[in-house]
Structure formats: C-alpha cells, structure tokens
Length: 107
Image (cartoon, rainbow, N blue to C red; front, side, top):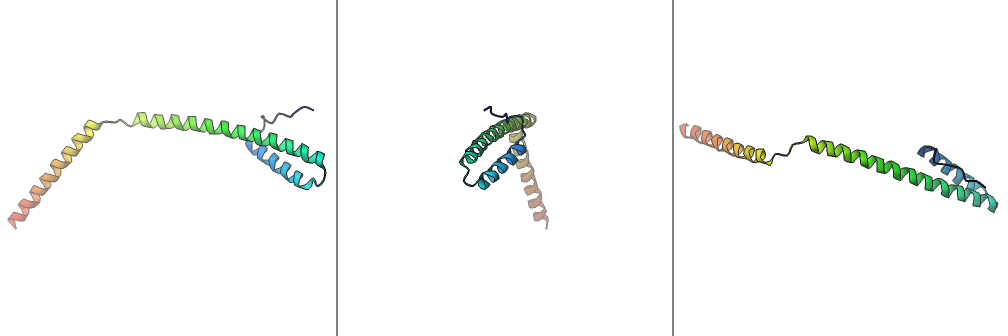
C-alpha cells in the first residue's frame, strides 16, 4: 500500500481532513480495520500539520527578526547627546527658577 503525499496540502486543508478523519472514526463502530486505517491516516495528517506549522513559525520568526533588526538600525543610539540634553534641561529649569524667584522679589 502506498502512502499518499500530504505535503502539497495547505494547513487549512489538513485541519479539515483531520476533522473528517476523527468524525469518521467516531462513526466507524466495531469495524477495527477501518478504525486502524483512520487512526493511521489521522496520525500522518497530524504529523504533517505539525511539520507545516513549525516551518511557518520558523519563517515568521526569521521575518520578525529581520524587521526588528531594521528598526534597531534605523534608531541611532547617541548617549552623548542624551547627556547634553539633560544638562540643557537642568540649565533651563534653573533659569526658570531664577526668573520665578526674581518675579517673586518684585511683588
């Protein structure tokens, strides 16, 4: 008996076939030969679906890592500028305090 090739099917088709196989297995009753055949087909379909899902997950992870790498490259890291910005902010706030205290003095 030759095994059919399930690799050409899409994931949705495999899910439908697994569902149909389970449904037929539940209806098979006491026919052991049919139950064994359906069980074998179900296992093969599930393993093929798992293989396809792992492949899709790997492809997704590769694409997402490329996207994040591009994002990281586009955002320049300049800690020196950040330090300068903080010093500028400190100067700004101290000048505000001096302006506020001078205006309080004239009141």
